[in-house]
Every structure is written in structure tokens, then in C-alpha cells.
Image (cartoon, rainbow, N blue to C red; front, side, top):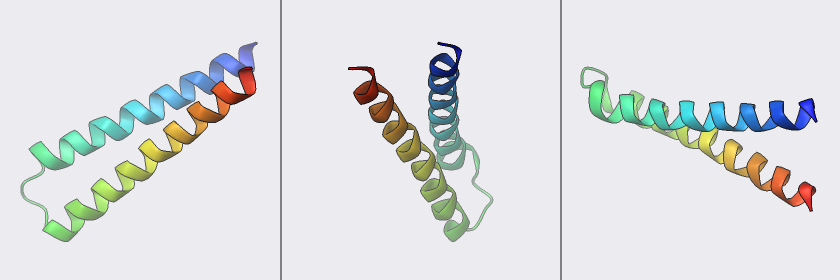
Length: 63
């Protein structure tokens, strides 16, 4: 039971961090080079993809 809760906590934390990372890169980081900003958005999308993949895996295993 604890493991399942910790898994969900990790998914939520990584997903939230990915969304915040995209927001910071798009709206607050105006001084970086465009290629750096693009690579940071790609990294954030990878984090979001991981969170979605793990959430789906946790939901499917539940049934």
C-alpha cells in the first residue's frame, strides 16, 4: 500500500515539475539562446511523457 502511494506521489511530482519547467522556460527565461530553450522544453516534455506513461501503468495494474 505504501509503495503504491509513493509511486503516485512520484508521478505527480515529476509531472508537476515538468509543467513548471515548461512555464519557466517559455515565460521567464528570455535571456537564453533559442536552442537552449528548445532543448529545455524537450526535456520537460520527456518528464511529462514519463509521468503519463507511469500513471497509465499504475491505472492498468490496478484493475
